[in-house]
Image (cartoon, rainbow, N blue to C red; front, side, top):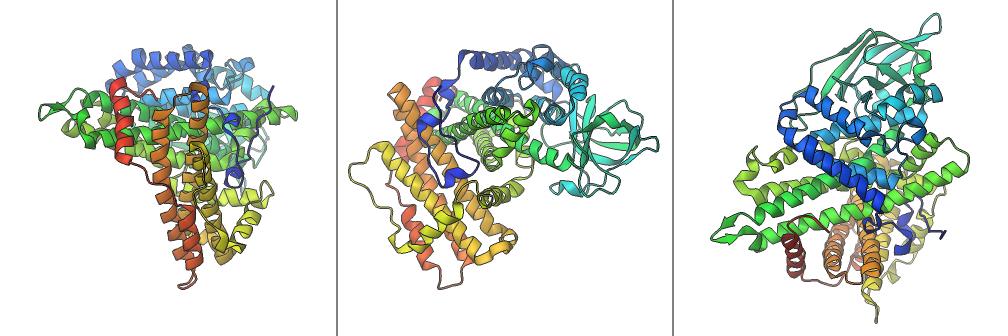
Length: 592
């Protein structure tokens, strides 16, 4: 078996791989495509005919549809076979998450159950806990929930006040506290609850059953979107939790919470991809039916611009998602080969790619917001009507920038985590940045004679990375440990890093497509626009960072270098976007 080069999390900033090293969606096998088709068929037959009633809301109906998904085996895709699941790869799990993402509020309930409601027990639980709970969660016999957030503990999860005190006989933890914004609250049978034991400074995690005396669930919240999902507060009043329901070790809850958030962020990236593809299909089908001034609106340049940009951002997200998904599969395999328990191996493999998880969460949620906003605009007045699915999609989309850690928190995590990984010795971030800074006058972005199409694009990417490294170097030298207080500067650097990763993922994918298919002109059109516009965004973010961190009169060297490193050839974005839109219009659905 050929050994592929695998980069550590964040290492893409200082190293390169080839397109042969990555996985692309064009390589899905027959089994993976069959799983995706099964989910699509399920949405068409069981969900879409009932979605209005589910969103009324009707949590009994929601629970019923969830149970049907369990009966079909859809809830066991990530669960090993010995616990009643199918033990599929992480790539396959992400494809399933993408496909279910077109399911509006159902996807929220489903993902909460199969992800954060089940996997903490699978990954960190004892064998007895797996046999008692995971086997039934995998089939939908039980529905799960995840209880971390409290009224005074949102982004700062470890500040929660819920407390567990060991009983005098040592057989139970007596649980008291309050949780809020709990998905599936009013029908979940099991809850993964985080609390501090006695006076511990860090959290522990427990499996709490809904029918334990003292568990009280409030009525559901009234929400802007995802109305069909049950979201409520849960109170714990002297709840006796058996000591054997402690998940992992005492004090391990904070680690569990963080690790599960990394997983949730990556899978949310896949979820919003599915929602974006559906919104694009809704957009083009409406544009191909709606006439104004005796012409289909799909013939208008402004509409083509919108359709094309929807495609570009969605295709870009997809490329990055499956690139990191295969990296995670390889990391999981490496962990298993060391003899690690398969549950711990899975979550360690996922958690390793924390930088990429935060990137996908931010980029994906903001890409979907753009796509669905333009979908409403393409529909015009009808887009504001509850008769159209894009209205539901618009409302449902907004929560994704808050779920799994706000985008503000995740933006800070991107650069902070990359720097911490470098300081641990995972890769030489600061050394390469110092070398660049020491030879600033020789930084250039000139065209190299005789370059092929992809050689030019990879040269741009190398330069983009250098621009990000210069910004990181300047910020660390200027602020040192106080950089954490300069959130605006960190956000600018993160925006540079996000564009680098997204642009590189697409370049690698499209080069591989050209190798497999030969003709990749429509994909090159996507890449041309993506690189051209990424260059402008990286330049602006870099300039914003430099002007915000250096005193007046000391900025010219860095500003000039970043300008050179973000210089790219001009492209006719109008014609490129029209070509992309024309392909979409001809297909009458997203098929890129």
